[in-house]
Image (cartoon, rainbow, N blue to C red; front, side, top):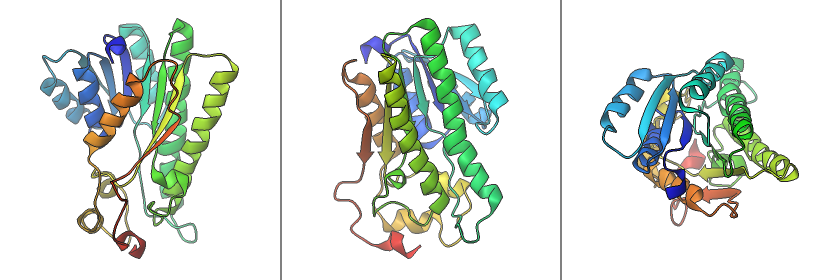
Length: 260
C-alpha cells in the first residue's frame, strides 16, 4: 500500500457501513480520501475522528442519483487536490421489489444508484486518470453475490439482483476496454455475501426486517470488506484481481433467507 500514500481515492456511500470502514482504512494508509454521501453531517463527524492519521478525509455532500452532484464533486477534486487515482464505487440501495408488482420508483432508484451512479463515477474517474496519465489507477466496484446468481444470494431482492448483475457485466466490459487501449488502470469487482450494514433499514422491505436476516444468519462485518479492498489495492501493478466473492466461512448453514 505504500505506493498509494499521498494519492487520491474517491469512496461513494462513505458515511456508513462498508464505505465508512473503507474510508477509515485508506486514511490510515496515508491516502487523501474524498468521501461522497448525502449525509454530510456523518462525513464531517468521520473527518473529525480521523484527524491525526497519516491521510485525510475530504467530505463532499453528493446524491449519487444526480449527475450534476457527481460532476460537481469531480470538478472540486480536480481544482483542489489534482485528480483521482482510486475510485471505489460503494454506494448501493436495495428494495424488496418484485417484477410482477413492484413499484417503478423503487426500480428506478436501484438502477440510478447501483448502475448509473456507479457508471458516471467510473467514467469521470477514468477521465481524470487518463488526463494525468497515471501509472496504476484502480477502479473497484463493491458488487454483491446477488450479481453472480449464487444460490445463497438474496433472491428476495429481485431488481436489486438485476442491478448487481449489471455491475458484473460492466466490470468485465470495462476490463476489456482498458486492455484493448493498453491502459495501466485496473478494475476489480468485490462481491460480498451478507454484510451487517444499514442497507436493509434504508430500503423498503416487504416481508422481513434486517433483524430477521441478521439474527438468523452468519454475516460479515464492514471491516471484512475494507480489508479486502486493502488487499486488492496492495497487489503489484501487474496483478489483476477481476472478481472476488467474499463469503462467511462455510456459507449459510440455515435456509432462513429462502423463507423471505
